[in-house]
Image (cartoon, rainbow, N blue to C red):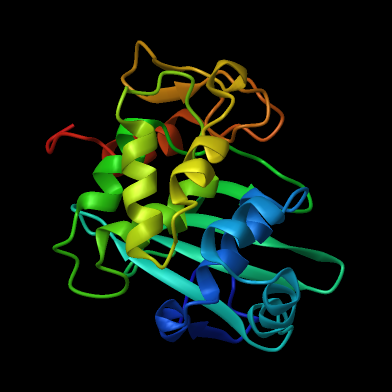
Length: 235
C-alpha cells in the first residue's frame, strides 16, 4: 500500500484483521481506553492478556497495518498504525489515492492531536458504503473512526448508534455500558463552528482542525477536509 509521506515504511492492508474477533477490543483498548481497558474487555468478554498479545501483531515495526476507507468524492481516510519504536500511535490521514498531497486529520497516542471529526462527519463517513475498495461495512467504519471523533453536540441516539456498531463487531451484553462509557463526557468535548470562508473548524486547542492551535491546518486544507467530509454532496 502507498500513502504520501509513508514511503519509507512497509504498509500492509489491515482488512484481514477485521475478521478476527480479538481485533476490535484490542483496537478500542489501545485508542480509547488505554487507561482502563477493563471496560472494553468486559463488553467483548475477553481477557486483557489476549488483547496485549494481539497488540504485538498490530504494532510490528516492520509491517504497518492500514485500514482504508473510501469517501464519496474520491478522497479516502487511511487509518495507519504508526509503529515507530520511539513514537507509536495511530494516524488518521485524508488523501486522494492519485494525489501526493495528504492531510492529517488526527493522531492518537504519543503526541496526540485530536479530534478530527464532528459527529455528523463521523456518521456520514461511516455510512457511506459505496466505496469500491477498503473497509465498506458501516459499523466497522464507525468504530475505526471513533477515536478521531470528538463533539459536545451529540444527538439523543448517539449511544444507541455506537452500541449497535459494537454489537455488530462482536460486543456482548455489555455493549450498552461500553457505548455509554465511550460517550461519557460530551460536555468536556469541543464544539465545531462554520468559519466565514466555509470551513468547519474545531475549538479544541489540540485539534488539527483548529486554525489557531499549535498544529492547526491552513485554510486551504481546512476547506478540503470540510468538502471531503461534508454531510451533503456539493459542499
